[in-house]
Length: 323
Image 1: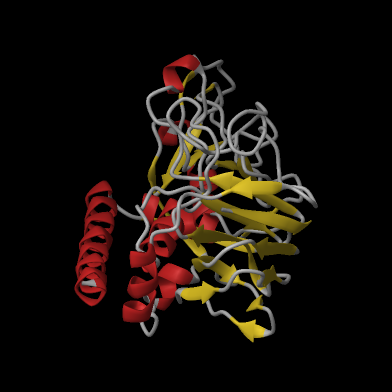
Image 2: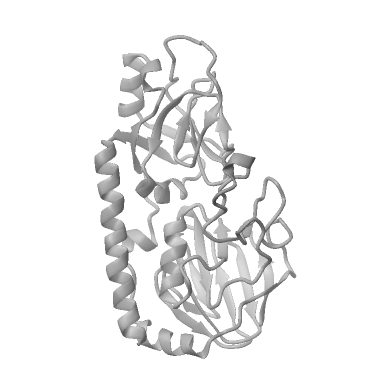
């Protein structure tokens, strides 16, 4: 019950929904940068929503399966094939023993998430199987996958074969399985330090585009564009930050914190990208242009609640077909 990494690709790591409850000790949340995408992929193959899968950045991954497995993936626009047969995003499929799964380069976006029946079986560290690439722990030996790696998989349940046959014609909504967009607009709520920025800076932040810097990574998306200036340069006390926080360092170039971000920060926090739009943020690549648009906190809550309700209806529909 294993799969062999024929080609590790540009950057592939084992991820689940992340480590919760350890931020007070300086441990990042981590996990899939788009946890919603991994949840949907897992649901499509009758996995637990939090089962560990693979986060694939810029493709190039090739996997050989030693036994029969069900798979599904969600994320950017990738060319994915089982042997020579295309596997679209948001569709469940079955691989026979000895078959290979290949991920090409993305046309739009940069990441996708692969769910495999019964999940990737790596040790649980601090409540999660996720790889912390900065701290080098968790996942598969605390690192990205390499050519020749052999990963253990959970015990395959034959009921999952029946599940695939029941839901193989299903697909999740397109914006769930492929959230990558050209020139996205990220919605935000005001940050705790919003008032520290003058009117001109606020106008620039909400009306002008920003370009994604090549220095971006799983820790944060860095932006080039209009300089965001504070009214004064008084020092701030470091305080808690989380994925979605937009900090503005002395350079005036904003940073959108992502899953592997630190747990505290001393830069002013101009805004917080809403949870719903972190799926688009996870797809940003160098050179992409983004805009920011303000929404109310009530709207942010309502948008997230509506999506969770839609997911629950989808979950119920899948369960009826499985049974």
